[in-house]
Amino acid sequence: MTDGPFPVDLIGDVHGHAAELVDLLTALGYRRAAGGGFAHPAGRRAIFVGDLIDRGPRIAETLDIVRAMEAAGSARVVLGNHELNALCFQVADPAAPGEALRRHTARNVEHHAATLRQLDERSLAEALDWFRSLPFSLDGEAFRVVHACWDDREQVVIRRGLEIHGGITDGFLVAACQQETPLCEALENALKGREMRLPRGSSFVDPHGVRRFRARARWFADPWGATVRRYSFPEIESLPDRPVAPAVVAGARPYPQGAPPVFFGHYWLDPRREPLAPQAANVACLDFSVARGGLLCAYRFDGPGPLAAERFVAVPARS
Image 1 (cartoon, rainbow, N blue to C red):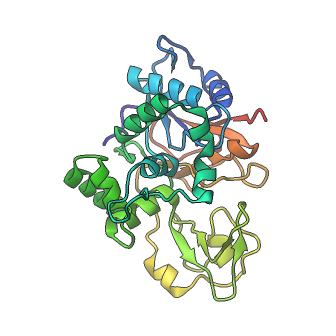
Image 2 (image 1 turned 90 degrees about the vertical axis):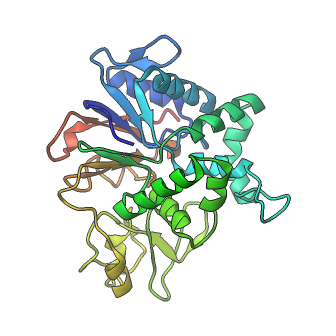
């Protein structure tokens, strides 16, 4: 799918924080519109990078606002991993009777609990139907949007999978959950980010208390000459300052400098450590952890040229 004309305002992971979303849209100049959404008097459009649901206190209101904006043509939305997880949580696994594609383990239920608690059966069904109508990315001459990681080859794999299955059907979801297949790997990277295996003896504990032996990689950068710590994204200070493994260097596909600007979320950047600034002249992460007391962030995009820190707009979490 292609992007529409700019100017646009690209908005990071909302995670059910409707009050902060209203604050951010207001700061960007949007005003309440008919149907419960927001519109900009100058015709700007909002583009959401995914992860509208889970974690936050006002998920239903968040969905109402964004769906109304999308229906009115004042917003576009790409899917995040939480939206895909929600779909897979409800679709039966034909290879495992009685199980869903996304298993109802204690950890998976915990991650999805706020959505299940806040949406009644009808509202959840309507949300899931809407998710099936949304794209996994936007790709145009002016800019690109994906939830976590852009890779040209993997975007082709995802588009081909959608063509084969006629969109985000149950068949597509079943195929997407088949481990170690090109479609599964492409979606994992696009929606969760590319990872690197850590050197033997290295690991870290994530914010959920889980020990990890792989770390999210700075996929948009060239790992040549980088250390494991500096190539992690966001940088994990406990990782060693040892060179990135040759296999990681060999398998990397850095985002080309001449490619259209790419905007994404997902990475829970900490605004106390990370500046509100692009990661490169054509690369910008917009997730600054509103669901952990950080910021809800947007980027005002008005056309060609290097991305700039002064184009970021953010509001603080209310709680």
